[in-house]
Image (cartoon, rainbow, N blue to C red):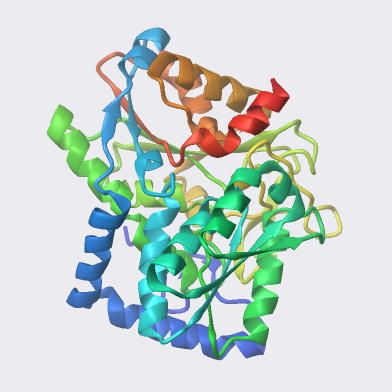
Length: 396
């Protein structure tokens, strides 16, 4: 099956480009520039060199033996994206897009961030190349991710706090889009997840697909076989699609994306677009057609998650497509389950995961005991938990 979008950026009925007229030309320019570098050997060589020598790739595939023994089922492997420079998978996409921005001659970079990891990654690559950097972040996320706010400022970025709406990721994206419309000639919008208008979902997926390519090679070398199951948390969806992409054609490999179940099943108290009663419906948000949480009047619903990076009303269009055709399953883990998984992985393996990644671990704690010891699960450990330790300490 073909898992590429069509020339208008649609996977099936999901994707596209729903933006003001003022952004159509910049998006056409971006699309043309991206496709020019996608197959350019020099660009790809520089990208790979920075992934290797600046970010520290390849990241290891770690056999979590004690966790596997404790659960008494499948063998669990962790793809250690937390060991990347800046602490998460976000640096992969940031490196790719900053190289593209330089090719396009843009001197000013803007970005949005929820958990702060994309903001930190963007500030990092801007510092590397001496470019101006502005990061938009919701006030609620600024409060719970104070460490990452300081890191961004230390790296030379200006962090603009957004007080609108729920003061989280959706609101930060809104402000970043407004900035881009106003300053489009000089500014490059370095979007952090596999969402937004075409070509962003495709471009981010491509830059993050290094995760799955490495994982495939590593598990075959380690076990001689493909994994039985892949698991990753899903907010916008870049770490998950980065892991899944290289395995989509392998029908025997089960794939599970784990959304934020939040505090309850009530609309406004979770961020599960696929998995709650009265949950996501097809609609358009921030440039793309996908599943999104809406009230009975079609207004964008408030969301909640203990993890800032999963606290978003929509999901990347490729995930909506993969769910619609049944290729990927989507589950959810609530705040309490994520908090427990955060502690369990820390106790059993000496690895403190990001709260986002802990949602994936939480689902593994449910399904691994139901599987046999000769089966394998790979979970994408998308980020490390340093940024969340203070928040967790306060909750506990």
